[in-house]
Amino acid sequence: MASRWNGITFGIELEFMTAIPNTKPLWRVSAPEAAARLNIAELLASCTTLPIACECNHDPSDDVPCPICFDATSDTRGDRVHLVSGDIGLQLGEALRGECFLFSHEFLETGNPINAQRDWPGVEMVTPIFHSGELRSGLPTMASVLGHIRSMPLEITVDESCGMHVHVGVKTGMTLLLAQKIITMVMLVEDTVLLSLIPKSRVASHFAMPINRDAALALNKTWTTDTSVNQLQESHVPPMETMKPALWNNYVPLHFYSMFHQVWNAKTLPELARITRKNELTRVAVCVALRAPWGEAVSPRWPGDLEDTPSTVEFRYSQTTFDHKLLRNWTEVVCTIVDLAQADPGTYKTYLTNIIETQHQAEQQGKPAWEMLMKNVFDLEHRIPEWKQQLDNYKQGVVFPELDDEQLLKSE
Image (tube, rainbow, N blue to C red):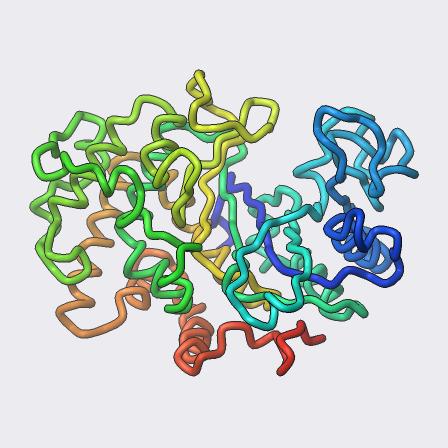
């Protein structure tokens, strides 16, 4: 495993809700979301030496201090972020994002009656940018942070409106070719792996819309007539004859190859980002998250090509979790997809062929395709027992085992 995930970078976003603290009574009306996220940031900062930050509450165009950063010094405040603790050597004005555990506001559409009645602010915890060493070590930093959060004197809850989003990129910067290879592989394993490893209730929600069903390229009505193959696609993707009609491809291989045609004919990362969304504002369960060379998130209407930038592919399928084992196992799966996509054209094409053939074999033998792919392609066979236990939990209706009877986060 020591050679796995070379050059991979990744970051994780966890969404949850937390109560407005009584320790900040003046904020309960004027800035409840700010009070909630600063409270958890300060509590976490008190029990770890890791850099912890909180997103400010003031308007981006207004540099007047807000309740979060009103007492911040010049070396702990910049880019609308207040560094609560830790020394990362940044000066005022330099980006703090990507270097710390950042707590920011998140709008959550809870459908859970208890959480709707509580009406607690939504919070998103964004991790620093991690490298492959963290992944090979089993995400020890995340284990520490999750353990601290679960031991805090703090009320936290989650439901299926809360997602775990994993951004995966590479140290050398995202390219159109790599993104095309990642998206193509995701399309092939979306139903058999990615959607099979999350609860059915999340699959049925609008929080994890499949790219194969809801993205613009899947809804393109020209798919029945336009499946021509360019030279780049031909060198990376096995021919359509490789994919026999079967349940896993809805008996329509032509639909997959129409989507492949659109992916491999995209001319820039922004164009690929546009066609893999449902529309310009609505992301599906996997998307190309575009960033300018200096790291700022930008829209799919960006005029440049964004080659070799810190852009990532964002995997939005999974529900949020404070269970380290699930977080680690899911992150390994999506990072492995990106790792495999870094292969040379011939090897990558072989991976796709193996995926297609394995999924056919699984269907013929009546076996779970995800399990066979973990063994035959992903080299994650050692995680199969833990995934089986996770799927058993889902079958029993247990999506968040880390919650107690009042749907509050339990200590470990």
